[in-house]
Image (tube, rainbow, N blue to C red; front, side, top):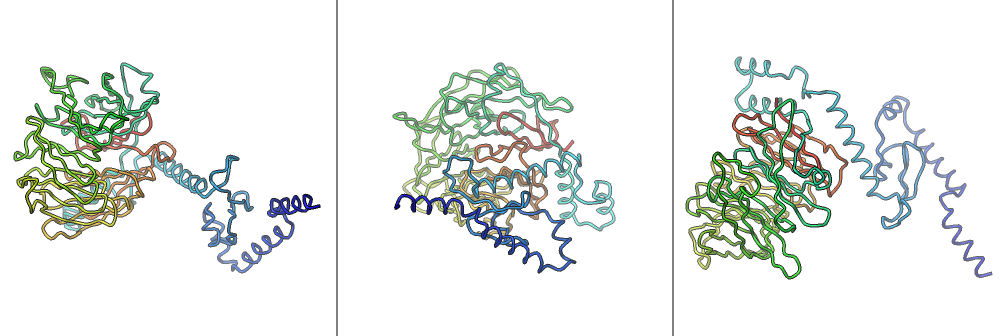
Length: 495
């Protein structure tokens, strides 16, 4: 008797969504809610695209039932299940993923249909130039609209990558890409299936329309380890080396390694002599930066947990500066002897390199964000610095007044260590969000110029890595954006 009643109760809980009273009650609520709408507004609501989120169901004619999700396509409720079930559950995360994928496909379809996308009717180069000559547009407005026109006309084209190991191109995924100063080489970090990372250099001089073909040069001599940070280093000549911060494995400590670019390919006239390859034992570096300042020649910096290390490559001498938080972003100033740092605590401070590590007063500037700072970029005049954080905030700071003078809206980030790209020559700011959308803003007025969806489905493991340059492929190249995602490389060119 006890067993039978227990089974009945258990059966009743499982069959609750199929209860006739439940179906009738839900249908009555939907009918009553729909009847309250006036005929004038009913046609308008039918034309709108319904949301697939359970949280927005209450805003339409369908009531929001706790624990249930209303599918507007099937016109019925489904029960929300915990995410750990293994029976193809319907969870809030899967609903959100479905919404994002639907939005991404719509944007890709719009871009493919429109071809060269024009932002507004009558928005073209000739009309802008004519209005500028007649005095209808000031210099600031003309520059912003010209950049908006160029950015809106960029079209996505897939780049063919040639390599001595074609099988590796089909299996290894791009983790990050980094263009050198002249934008004729692209350093790549690829994740391999067996674990760790593999490095390569792509020669961009063949990046010309209509055939976009590039060649990847790889060097498999180095051990595969996770890369925390990377930057180009100028030791023998401009961008002669690559500085890598590698994570420690088991008993092997972390280190900062200088790799000669000549180990991958001899890309300079006359060929490179074998460059200096050296490694410095540095535990757990979050960030790194190379100095081009004459007062800190042949030096690099690494951001550690509660410490900053400035190391001379020639002498091995180190300066240590204690901090109150982990240093996630760094950049050296070119004219002033300053090193800017962004911390997990949200603090941005500059180190005066003329001060000794044991002295006082080495903090030259202090700024504050509300979240962990992931990227710091110094503008050319060194009067402003731009920073982004893990809350998706991008701010432009005036170093003279230590005040935020501009904020760039739309960036999406919750916890990822994402870079920020500032290009003053073209007057734009580029950032890839955690939602896998690449956004481009006007540097001068923070106007969002374009949002580019990823060519692949949105995934936390497939956030694109981008590189923008005014001269892709060298001095004779055209401005454009390179996007690496999964095993593919795409080019968005002005021309």
